[in-house]
Image (cartoon, rainbow over all chains, first blue to last red; front, side):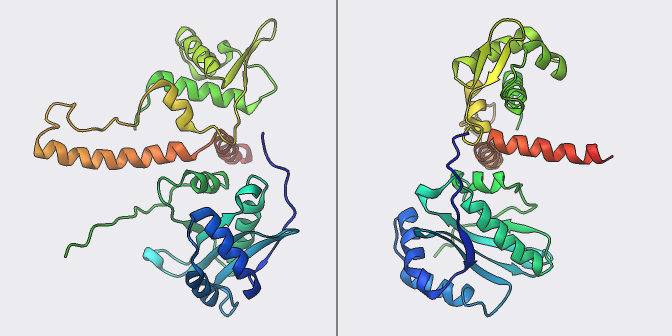
Length: 153
Length: 142
């Protein structure tokens, strides 16, 4: 099945000392280094002040191998409380080794502990890699249609 | 979104073979299960063989074996072998499609097709096998 052997990782809450590695991992994937953005995300999601906000990392023998960020939101788009995954990433050389699945399972477990029974995410239509990942985890199309328009002058 | 017959037969065949990758599945078995013409199905199976997705196993107990990577091969990869859905809803081909109403309708149809294409591109054979397994569970529990 061409699956890379599973990599042993420990999924835990992010610590401030992890941020450098998270920023580097994100920059490796997106090509953009965004320290202020990640500091803000850490401030909002990573300090463990609110249980509904989660920022988790997968720590392996060589450091941070991936991260996931999400939160439980009430009545978002008219829907009862559900978990939203805003971001998930795994170091490119460590993919297909079960790390993404462990991260998603960990954040879903956190959502379950808060009493929610559904998890959602939103992705660009052409993001095949991450779309395929979520599909493989069992996600199907949600009963929503994202809409947008250009704002004229 | 409507797929051509050959495309549907191809998806049936690939998924049947991928469910039991070690066992050759005969064309007759697939044709009977899905109530399709063996003649038409044979052409589809040959095309899947040429594409390296299935492999023909000859002799007694012969048939077709799945040879692709189920975690990489998507529904779109199979569909693309049999039809081009990438530019299906382009304007200017149907009667009336160059009019202002036709063009506006084309925009809506294209939006629908773009979503369908993204769905086909994001679902691998492995994901389909899991979906089949999940859809069988309620039936087994009855």
